[in-house]
Amino acid sequence: MNAAPDVIVRLFTPADLIPCTEVERAVYGSGAYSTYFFRQLYDLFPRLLWVAEDRRMGKIVGHLCAAIGQGGQTGWMLNTAVLAHYRRQGVGRRLMEQGMAELRAAGVQRVLVTAEPENEAALRLYEKFGFQPVRLEPDYYGDGCDRLVLECRVMQAEVTQQEGS
Image (cartoon, rainbow, N blue to C red; front, side, top):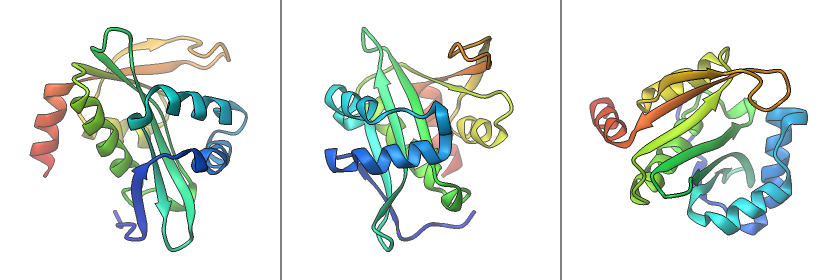
């Protein structure tokens, strides 16, 4: 895996609304989250929205959106998107590290994420962070596509990260 030395991971700011939406559309097409979504998530969870920025190019090349469920025990990795040219360079991993660290700091006990069952790259990434499949949800978004729900116990995530260091 190549390192992307010119890519930094930083907190999202409102100035990132349009660039994040553009990355989202490039990665997810018609299933992309809207600018409205990013703004609302920022208002609710300002420490759980991160961007990857190519400093050399001066552009946003990826983002991670997380949230905390009612009661504060469960965190969610809602969305990770990295432009194709920046994949397999550790950008997604760095975004996930930051998101998991923030969720741990917030005191969640478990983190959930969904993925397309065929998305082997995403599943490998989540596995590196200690996520395990818990169930297959048919027609998850009402679009006829199934999603695999994966769970990570926060203690497991810390052990997995330490072993991988």
